[in-house]
Image (cartoon, rainbow, N blue to C red):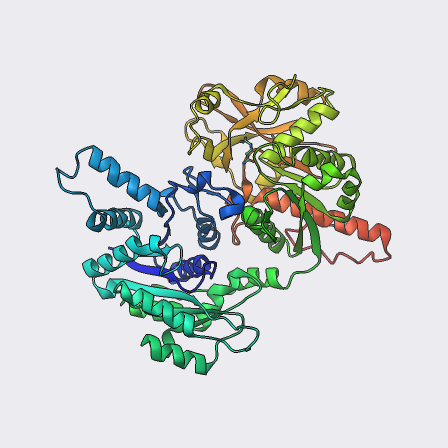
Length: 579
Ligand code: GLN
């Protein structure tokens, strides 16, 4: 049977519960325990698939096709393993199951009630996800005191009741503000959060204190006094420059060992943090920095700019750069600005590379196409992801293959050349307004054309899986889209010079284009997939490594030709491009 750790948030949202949960998971894995992580989202949506990115950040896609809250992405990036969609539990799923059960007569005529039926369904799902694991860490979304949190807190207490205190531990991640007009760290909101948790019968075993600066002894004592918790169980979590430092900081406080002891376990091995520390150092103390622009559209929320919509791309760039020992500075550009002002395209020369990420709908599309055209003509490294690939195909069709007014039918249904289009199955789904969970979702295989850039990149990281039935070597990336390159245009576009370097073969024989590239360009690669979902700190994605290395090469070339700094690029490391 698994041991359980519940992670709750106090005071405000966005306090770092996800990173705390991922770090605890990484620690338990490093001590030799088979560990899994669960995210609970108290919203009524069935999953995150229909949530607007500016409202809730990026939608994370699991290998088995789940559309999930982005915290699951943090878990995978720390744990370096796939986490299935059953590890995300939403209130929507819980209520739907209970009502479906009631309609099917499964409650045998009983009155179906909030207590016990809702917590029972929560517990059933937690147990299902924890099956086969020694340690299960459950992050409860939201903040203690939220109305919608209640059934999950009740379930945590019920699980503690069932398995006993030695099998269930609780962590409160709390925030200690320093109001600028008094310049003093305040513990009162944390005291209130502890009280709210106690009202549900839950006593925190550990309090993780999120602060701008390290917490001092006086503050620790106050929390200790009000929360009746020993000072060793108050864990400091000051702001850090990289989230990947958090498990290292926790280890300095012996958080892992203390939690193992609290659960009456014994470490199965001594962790070795050397490799992790080296990777973190590469992030926080990078060598030369490449400058990458991401031209997106999900950036504005009211008066704020939000990058959460593209968090996995940001992380994948960081992993790839750290792997090759250089840094990466990201600039966010709004695609719409290029539609109003074509002169703005010149600013793209100031970057070593540009990414056009995924997206939906019409807005910003012509701006993105202008950007892609500029990058193609000016030999600036380009990586297109999902919509970014579809628009690269549209750009090439219009401007090189001379298919005037070619478009994606997502934007222009009457285009004479729908080079990107819906396949018949998707047309049926849209006719029925069936939007939830019906895109091409999750991991799909691709066969790569030998001799292409994409093939060479996957060779370097040996990401191939051999199909036992056919003996073919395939690569797998995750997907989330409805539209595809129209199979009827593939030959015509290839004759004009674009290379489709990989495709997915469906059971009915249809080939879906997965990668495109331009052979005579320093780096013009785009993919229908989302390679950012398969990038981990310990295992960066080859497409991103290829892109950042091409950016690094451009940085060296530009510097060498414009400055007398022939030595600008130091001796390349084993995995680095030489320049
Ligand atoms: N809107 C496009 C489609 O549905 C691309 C989606 C994406 O970029 N994730 O096919």
